[in-house]
Length: 77
Image 1 (tube, rainbow, N blue to C red):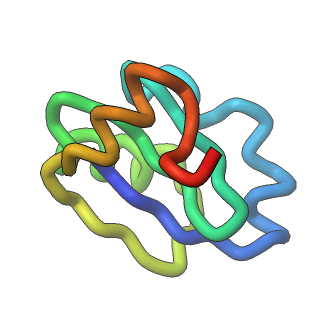
Image 2 (image 1 turned 180 degrees about the vertical axis):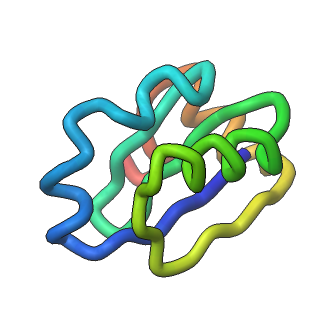
């Protein structure tokens, strides 16, 4: 999984440029999550597309991530 933090200005100009980089792209208020088999490779492709990122974190999916991916809901709902 790749977690990206972008400025609002950059987010406004994405126009789907991240959609094909992962199996699923989740746009949250404070970050964008890319569910990709290889987070490092997804990050490299983000850089190739010259998307200006504030920060990036490549991590393994947690059980909560898996739950959200399967149900499409948060644990709070």
